[in-house]
Image 1 (tube, rainbow, N blue to C red):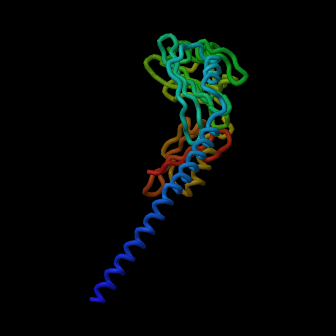
Image 2: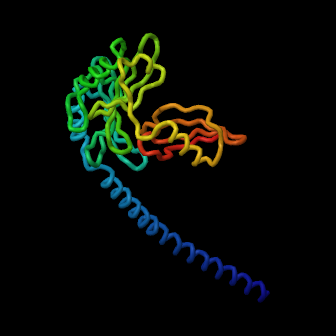
Image 3: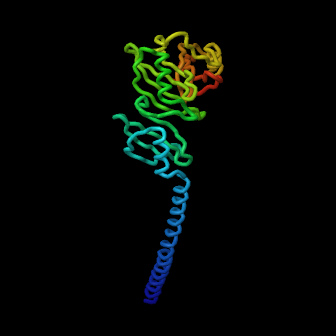
Length: 262
């Protein structure tokens, strides 16, 4: 009987102890959660402070200084840690998207048919009209399908222009400031007027040597000029043993911009 009473008292004591411990844990939990919530809120607040210095209204004014269109939508976007305003405009029935850096107000790119815009001169690029005139001189019989303004990784702008010549479609890239030819699709190159040539620091033979040196050994199957990662490059197809690889060599400095193994 005494043993039973002792066991009973022990169980009561354990139960009370468990209740006290549980009560203490419950009383601390809300405090811990509140502290964590406060930290998270502060972190979120700091993140919002760092993501933009330019207001939506300021971004709109910057965009309108480039394109005289009707604003349809404005969104704050993020790409690789960079915040920017994507501003959608309508101009002469065409949609134009303008990206403005949310911290600096810098123009990142303009997507859309700029041949229908009234975009004028800038310190960073020539007017759309001058770019259009240059295309007409290079390809007198061409029909311009689309023109966009983009930025290379080195910060320079270029016009990406799509044209049609006697049923052949192709793209031309012009330095947006000097209107120098950066790249012409091989499909439309035969229609280029006169003796216009594109001068590159690295010729084809040197590019092939650099590509083979990079791979180690192999047989060159094909080489052509193209555009990769914002740069004009030689795309060199090499058969290296049982594998094939495309090596992209910068036409101006010989750097390997990219490689793609099959």
